[in-house]
Image (cartoon, rainbow, N blue to C red; front, side, top):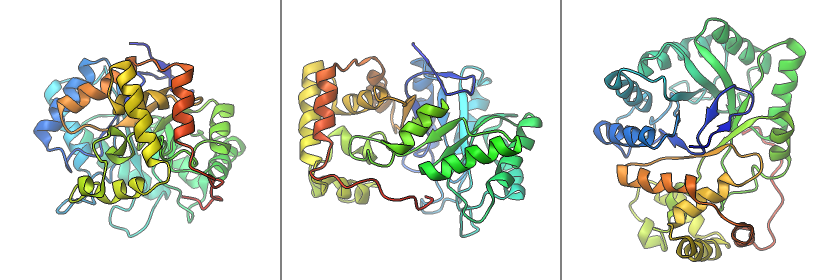
Length: 329
């Protein structure tokens, strides 16, 4: 499979990243193992998770996804053919985001233990911590890199001004810089990445692994009405997409192009992301081997210029508002 460089990390990755957010939530351990096996069998090689996954589920405390991935690694007896990315900083019981040095140095030990590995390939700041100076956070990452516990670092959910500040602090103080960014990005949610943030990432040569690639499942085409979304784990998010002014146009265009290419709407939606400037790979999750098989097809689907233009037009809301100002999220 053709790979792409993940910014300046030195890693080459396949054009689809597996999201581990569903492991321990809507996908139990046994099914997660099957999904992970299928993912690697297709030649994909980057698995993304976070320490907080899936704390939001009733009865969960966080760490469930990392634990499942770690058990899968133990059962395989190897992970030299896959890269592991995880995140730190989400609320794990403190009541707020935290990227203090002492917190990071403790949290990484928990993640390493759950993942059953000695070194995390990509360790990412999950959110901006407005109360902790960037140099304190980056110095913690520097320590972890020097100790051999982390190979590269990245950021998630950073607006352009926050990311630029962190990059400038790293350069000023001789600290390791973020090499990757993880923003939300899909046909229904383009404004947060396109424009200033996209331009910054391209200028700095950053790898971009975008999340919400299928808009909480909306872009699979299986949710066409409020009734379809009712009672589903991601129903509230889907309801918001259904109410968007471009929703019908996006679904209709996905249907048409899926027919044209003998593909599925999900494959077309992911292939569109893969073709966008500055994107290294989208992240997508699967709760079954069958879903993973479908997602894998996106990596070999080549959309032509007319296809991309049609999706661009359909996904542009009427009188689209400008991107919101930086709130530090």
